[in-house]
Each structure stands twice: as C-alpha cells, then as structure tokens.
Image (cartoon, rainbow, N blue to C red; front, side, top):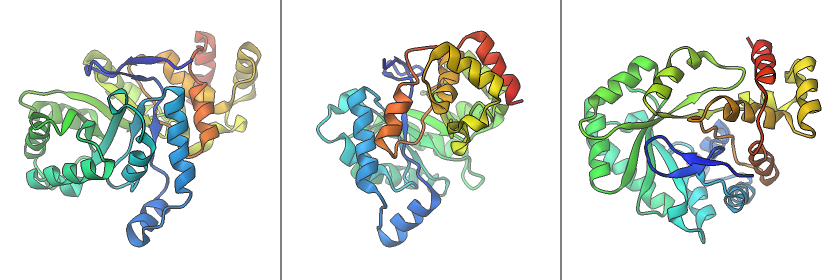
Length: 283
C-alpha cells in the first residue's frame, strides 16, 4: 500500500518513500567527462517502476548527472502528479549563477517548473542573503515552487530561514538512517516544531542496512516473527515511517526490483518494542 502525506507546508501530497537518483562518484565522472551513463535504461526503468506503483517523489541534482534520466522516466506521466526535487551546487550560489543553474535544470528535466529547489551544501563563498534572494526570485518567476536546503546544520538552517523575506524553507535533506541518528538531537526537533520536511539520503546506511547481518539477531528475529517475510531494507525504511510523520526517505532508485521492495516498506508499522530494540542495537 502506497502511503502519501503532505510534504511540509506545500499542500502537495507525496509518497512517504521517495526515489533518489544519486548513484556514485564514478557515474558523475563518466557522465561529465565522457557522457557515458552505465545501466541508464535500467535506472530509468527503476524510476518508471516507482511511478507505476505510486511513488511520486523524485530527488536529483545538477551535479548528479541524472536530471536527464528523470526527464526520460516521467515522459507520458501527468507532470502535475509528480513532485520533482533537484539541487544547485554551492559554486553556483551567486544571484546570477543560481538563475542560470535553475534554467539549465529546467531544460534538462524538460519541465516548466521545479517543485523543490534545494541548496546542495552550505557555501562560505557567497552570502546566504544573496543566495536566498535569488531563490525567492525563482519562486516569483514561477520557475520553482518551493525552497529547500541540504546538509545544513541547525545553526545554518536558522541563518537560511532568516535570510528569506517572503517565502519559507520547506525541507532539509540530511544523511540520516537507523545507524546515523545524530540529527535527532537538534535538527529533527526543530523541523518537527516548524513543519519542515526531512529528506534522509543514505536511509539504508550506504547499503549496510540492506543486510540481515547488520541487525542484532534478537531484534531482527523478533521483527521477522511479528511481520512475516520482510527484508532488512524494509525494516530500515519502516523505522522512519513508524517514528516520524514529516520524514520522507529517498533510497536510491537504480533497480526496479529494489524500488518494488522499498515501496513495500509502507502499509505496516513496527511496534514500539521493536523500535526500542532497533535503536538500542545501533547506539
């Protein structure tokens, strides 16, 4: 069962599990240097598989070299039903470069608007005020609908919020998983209080949490006994869904079968006892 919920304050309902399109550094190098894209069709089909299932949240970035794959995957689908998030790289954070980067992403994605435009990392080179003024102009011009950030600490998040004059930060994207929970100490409570959506990247812990061996046997065996045939990946993703209602993990969509597996993380819930067992195991 595909679960959907409003994404932050957008008014747009997205699937609780999204699809990420960061593959690996070698993909980026091959794409940019040689225009070679390994397993491109399989990756496009993975995104299409998710769309067919009802996963409508897709995350990409200008640096990934995957915006063109997203464009190919969404052809034939109603654009208004899909929530596309992309990111601008910090070297492009000047007013003029952000506008130019957004125009380039729009052309590559073959769309007239971007649902969520995110600052990929904080920048020490450009003023956050200049950067955010450019982001607000993009909203005014109808090129983007919402503003997000990625890899910003709590203090940097507050600075970004303060730099905006008339729009809000809708979301933040962070390295967050069952085995990496440091942001629960500060950023997570702040986002919950301010209705800021969180997009966890590496929600499967760089692949570690896709293996049964990553879980202590007591926790894993009890969960399997209670819920039947579920995979380690589904446990890791369902942990987010059970614990938070404003968190939307974006596991990588590179294989159609994995996308189906990830989608089946929805429609059920871990118990509080199981949550406790898992979290005590990954302290």
